[in-house]
Image (tube, rainbow, N blue to C red):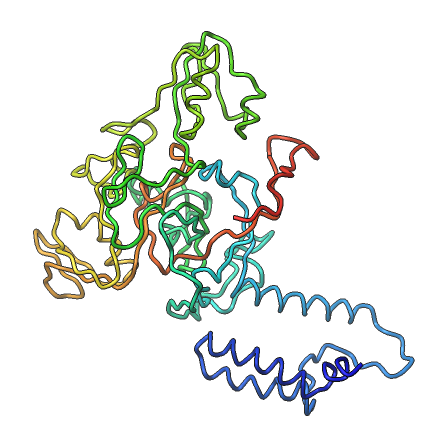
Length: 449
């Protein structure tokens, strides 16, 4: 009884919430918010202001208004969920197969923002619980006339090599309204800006925190040098750790018969995406991880298993203008790429016409400098330069499904300012090729990542 009396005491409740609020202000780092303690004091002690102005105070025996009760519940839920989304967790759904089989298409995740530290919203006036597009209308969900500079709160750790990371799509600052999932810059390189404008129509320009979210594996962190040799990743000269979810495609030649569907289901592969080509006979693009190659080779109807490796010039649908840095000087493909240095905050490197295609977007877009090139001379903010010091850490992201992933090989580095968080738990997983209830992947529900 004494415990209940203590908990119910207004000074105890005030002290509890004031301490929590103070800790949040210290974490947030804006001391003006200390004025909020006045509100907390009034809520629990003086009660002079009716902060929840929509909430009715009933007299004894008075009938409750269910509409006002629903309104109160909805407002409370919106405030709490918006706070949680901004600082702690955000829901995310895997829309493509670029991370299969580490993350499956149709996985619904909670993404932890605490791991790397939540970003403070750059667009504070926006529709609650909506990322960038309004439901039903399709318009932008935020106002552009108030925008704050990038700032990140303290997190539990830095981005580490082989972490799975959710981040804002680096090329997502310009988005075609008619094809929001397409890479605007890729279309411009292929067709030209005027053609894209004429055929695909208008575009929208978005701030960093309203770019679409992507999820990939960070294979190289700031200060690393990355190479991809025949489809295998090497960082600082050492091979990437063996991660079972990483897969390449193989040409699987059979005696003319298909591979048993039970084996395909056991490997968590989609039958609908595997095409049996009678002209081979077999499968031209069969995704396998390193541990599964010998299993497929041992099947009695399989004659040969051969890894698909792109050599220069890149195979269809890739081309030199689609592989970063979109410069034919670098004769790279998705399977033979680099070496490429990943910039680190504070690093000073020589800048010249040969490596400007690698680091030009960092200088001009991500770090907001005025970059100008005249003949063989490079000017940054009007000053002739031959070197540049990076202001931020950068990362190189790859999808685990290496031959079905648009990643850093196609659009370059991911700035630290674009990092959102890390997947923490799968709360639901559905197979879009199956009907209910067989479409529910029960073994993945509440899976900790």
